[in-house]
Image (cartoon, rainbow, N blue to C red; front, side, top):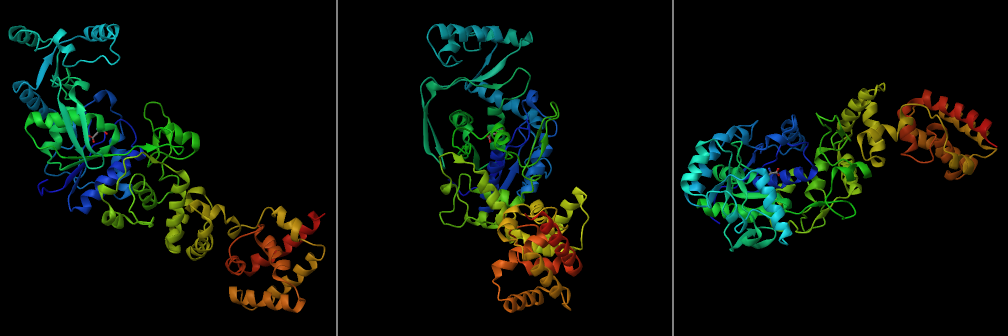
Length: 512
Ligand code: GLU
């Protein structure tokens, strides 16, 4: 290929919320563009007005922004190849359909829906299992190939509805080179005469897509595998126009966790994970779908996880910032086989990002979460310590609170297993004594607490296991958790003493 400027596009149709597979397509386009110092275009393919859903375009833009992969050109950004919505480019397409009519690569077809149905029925009766409007059946239909020029003219001037169809060559080997799959070869005998221009004056996806990719000087078409069957037609359209086709790369499908079929919204609902980047409410049905953002995912973790659904760097490294992905990405390392989505891995990614986020930043996020929940918020310093203590035990920001509620409030219950195993008849007296030692400490710091505890054990000739689990039980109600001295220093002397004395009473009266 010539050393053309790299220009790629993400071309979604605004027919609903963007599926995570769509976000992955956008991401690979973004990575490829940045890697090659090129442009990343967002083009809204809204020629099918019947499938238009209000709010879908805004959703797409917002989702890309949240992921940090905003386009460099598009309806919101502008650019010198606009407009970027196909509905605003309507006037452009007719001219190109006319060019194909003139060059004999396309023709008018006047068939009514009834005539089309009849054609399919007749072909089925004759034994065809995929009846289509093609190089053979078009001979028996009402089109500009079978009607005389005068008839065609008069039908058009009478205002008869018509479509413009591509005249598929009867038998021709069509070769498409795909960066991921190599040569894809199809015989045109398998393909039908696709409608390029509809009776409503709008182009179909196929025509608009080719014309726009050409006019927008797109160098590489990177899109989902579901478009691979259209690629031979697209190649033939480029040939018919006499244009150089862009390079193609068809990305592998995203599969369900069990590998059985395409990942769908239904799988997400059934297995309890989102398949959309952001929450979405269908404007017509009111049906809600959950998104990764609202589930508490970091966009960086979501993007990192998505990058690995179909691509790998060829090294064991799994954590990549967006810049590192740009650096490492190549289409050569994108696989052909469907990529199984793994919800546990998605969670794992978030956990990794949570752990590597600074305590102060986590505290800010936790604060917003607690505010939304109406939980009273301690100082930011305290919140930051909470985050530091809990982040090894959480995968999401809300869990920093949920798993560590005892850092905010006194325990409401005591872990039964620890109580049964560790709380002995002598425990109340022993813990009472330890409590007095703590109460006498001039400073309630992790180091002083630990020293005091060690001295106590030594004096009593007791092991750690006889006392520490009970102390944790009294203070937190749990059998496990982060460092005890940090916890006690965080909640402070007064709270610690209160919890110890209340716990001794509670556990003694409950003990059997
Ligand atoms: N509008 C198509 C879609 O919704 C775009 C396919 C392509 O990238 O060519 O996915």
